[in-house]
Amino acid sequence: MVRVGFVVTRRTKQNILMSTPVVISGSLVLGLLISYVIIWITMGIDIISFFGTFYQTITSYTGLLEPFVFLAMIGTAITIGFYGSFWNVGAEGQYVMGMLGAIFLTMFSPLNSIFTQDNVLLATLTKVVVVIFGGVLGAFWSLIPGALKAYAKVTEVPVLLLMNYIAYSISDYLTAGPWKGKYTYGYIRTDQIPESARLTTIPGLEMLRYEVLAAIVLITVFAYVLLEHTTLGLKIKFLGTNPVALKSSGYDDKVVTLLTATLSGFIAGLAGSLRLLGYDFRLPYNIGDGKTGFYGYTAILVAWLSFRNIRYVLISALIVASLNSFGYRMQMLLKGLLPPGLSAYAISLVLIGVTLVVYTIVRVLKEYSIKLVIKT
Image (cartoon, rainbow, N blue to C red; front, side):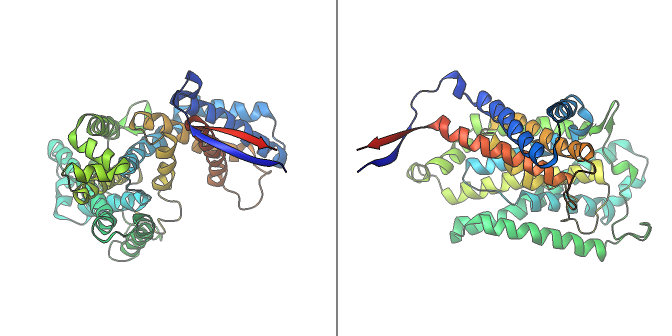
């Protein structure tokens, strides 16, 4: 009788081929090759057109800057949560809450009068307040499932997912109701925020704003210093890897859970307020119909692709942003060949999904040695 089985052992030594940068870049290349085979079989596109389009995508900053900065910010937020085993799949809702906070303060609060005055310094300081308020709303939205997890032992994932749709519904209610605009040409949406409340475009980089660039630098540095060089960062890591050791050290794991959820949601909320002030300028109706760019969901892939390591979030965000933009370019390239109803976002998901499947397999092989054993 022949017995077939597998022996799985954790690798104790890593060579250069199994280093994180090599795994990430190798997964991208292999994922693109497999994606090409799928598209070639179904639509017959030649390999030169496929990889030529990808080359144009990564060498043209126009379509990359906007998704990159927001995926990097929200990816950082989610990664902080992942460090502490707070699986923040609700960043999309926190992102929307940040947008709601920004539109409220700029359009429907007493601060609106500041943006009608000719005082640049005061308007600039008020924009900082608006952005922070969006972060506070994002933190509050994240704190609810965080508290349920800490004190009621309720798994946060389903709560976070449900709260995404609650945020969508709140936004749609306000947009179609009390916040409905007067100058919208028959569309259901809010009016645009004042010019003085908008972020400043960088000359020559039309898709980037000075304030957004400053925010991504500050958030990246803050997250790295927090997780690598502070006591709180060490507590968050212990919470994610060894909560028993955290308790035995005299720290309250409930408090650390709440702080982790708050920080994660705050950064996602910041991204939402920056998005509204710098790019959208108003709230649309049916916001859950792709009008957020689904950055809150896509950024989960950024956190996963980075090995949940804060050092690689920017690289992961660039890769995911490239694949996302590549999907839209592929839609134009395949015009007339696509099945009805297949959108650019769907193509992007195929590209990202295949790459992540490859990455997951390679990651398992990086961590574990798998041997086939045949006994007779």
